[in-house]
Structure formats: structure tokens, C-alpha cells
Length: 362
Ligand code: SF4
Ligand code: SF4
Image 1 (cartoon, rainbow, N blue to C red):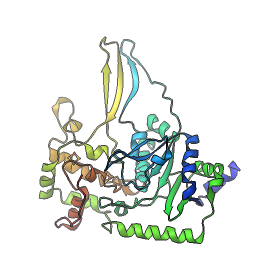
Image 2: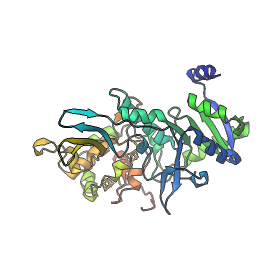
Image 3: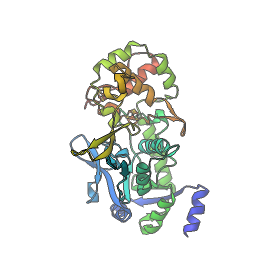
Image 4: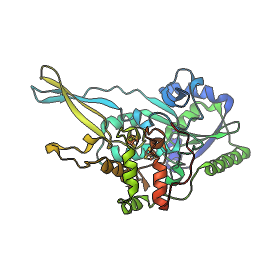
């Protein structure tokens, strides 16, 4: 059977099943047998975050974004890389015991974000810390409806065909499930009593949901030429005005599913005989980010740093043919200065005043 599954997988024929709403909690409980279950939960009136799930009733299915993106499970905000023996000039990488885990409810844009991170961390130089966690993680995608900040449709990251084990699409009475990996097949086979065949009504409902979703996006068209428009408008007053408002706090990069810059520091013990090498998330919006030995700073001014983020996020990731920005809207939603990243891109695209979009302010 396992062999057949692999043959099936290799010819890349997608498999579809359905799970009814009455079965979903059983399914979530069964997922726990594959590892610790993490999913979005409501943590305050306005915010959601991903947490380890004890009671599956706590899981939020209608969330739009979480405080930190799924990248936090694969690149920890702060971690020890190894211990250094200064006297002997040696180092030891601590044995990290990585337990399998399941991320439930990951939206399409974040799955594209993880694929971008794969390209960075696994393609040319393999980051073993990231690789081990990626291998241990099972990804269960979940369909969503956009809010005013979402523009994944302009980034071609509103739908994924790879990068998940299972993907659940909302139906009126359950979920249409796409199976995307051998692990996904295994889960469906092992929980077979929870799934049924997809009917013509389910297909019609899936179509309807996708159409409704497309109509809900505030903006349509494409941002494919944005990188070039940004370079051509580098001297526009827009960048002086907008960078002036920026607090340089780094919220936009921390909450971005694809921002991945980190800093490395050696922390010596008080006796000077041993040290720890740690790495932690850094932000291109910090002045220290471009500072090098001798006091030179590659991005001396706040405007340099601000504009660079726009160019960086809108350049192309050659592995996927998409930009490094997946259009999730997090950087706008969590910006304490109220800087509207999407609004600024729209201004660059249309060379006019921002389109009137009413955002709920954070
Ligand atoms: S979140 Fe807003 S204020 Fe903070 S660094 Fe980013 S753009 Fe500037
Ligand atoms: S730049 Fe902003 S909108 Fe684009 S992926 Fe990052 S957080 Fe999301």
C-alpha cells in the first residue's frame, strides 16, 4: 500500500476527500498522534496567535493573521547554535531533540512564505537547524477570506499546489481536503473513517467559495513589475514622507512570513573560558543592521533602511518566480506608526494618491 501511495504521489495526481463538520474535532484530536498540535487561538479582542493545543475547541478557524507567522517554528526568534570552549579552541553543537509537530490552519500565503524560506535555507547552503525542524513539521493548510490588508491575489500566493500535507477548503457542511504529500495520504488512510468522497455539491460549493473569496479582495491586477517601479520612483517625495513616520521598531520584519535576517553573537562566560554562540532575529529597520567594523553603515539613514525594505520584499525569488512579499498584510496591520505598505505600493503602481481604503486601525 505504501508503495502505491508513493507511485501515486510521484505521478502528482491530487487526491481529494471530504470531512464533515461533525468529524472535525475528532480529526484534530487524531492529529495529536502525529506530534504536538499547534493552531491559531484567539488571545485578545483583536489578536490571534499560534499555540500548542490541548482542547481542540480552542482552535480559531476564522482568523486572518496571527501575531507571529509560522516561520517562528522553523527559525526560532532566539536560539543557541553551539557551545564554545575558548581555552581549547573547540565547539560543540548541542543535541537538539526535535519532536514531530503539526501546524494546523496555515493559510496559502504562509505556505508560499515557507517555500521561500526553504529556498533560502535549504537550496545552496543547508541550514541544519531549519532543515531538522522542517522535516519534523506537518503542515495542514486552511482556506481563508481576506480582510482589507490582504493582497496575496496580487502576489499569486492566494492558492498553493505544493508545500502542505493536507489543505482544508471550507464548505457549508465541512471541508474539501486536498492531499499534498505522502504524509497527507498516510493521515487520510489512518483516519479513513472520518473522511468521505467528494460529491458534485461539494465541488459546486468549493467553486462558489473561491469566487466569493476572489471578489472580496480590495484590489485586483498584478504587482509583478513592482520591483522596477520602485527603483524608478526611488527619488519620489513619498519615501521622505513615509520614512519620516517610521519608528524603526522592526515589527514589520518580525511579523513578515518571509523576513529571515538574523544576527549572531558570542556570549562569553564570566570566567572567559567558555562561550555560547547564539543567533536571533534581526531587522533591516534597525540602525545596527547595516553597521560594520570601522563604523561604516551601509544604510545610514532611516529613509535608506525604509526604502530598502520595499525593494527587498518586491524583488524576485528565483526559485518560485514570485516576489519575496506574499501579500499577507501583516506589516501594515502590526505597524505602530500606521504606515500602509499596501497603500504605498498602490501609490507607486498608479503614481497617484492612495486609493481610499478604510482600514480598521490597530
Ligand atoms: S513596523 Fe512600521 S514603524 Fe516599525 S519599523 Fe516597520 S514601518 Fe517602521
Ligand atoms: S512585506 Fe508585508 S505584506 Fe509582504 S509578506 Fe512581508 S509582512 Fe506580508
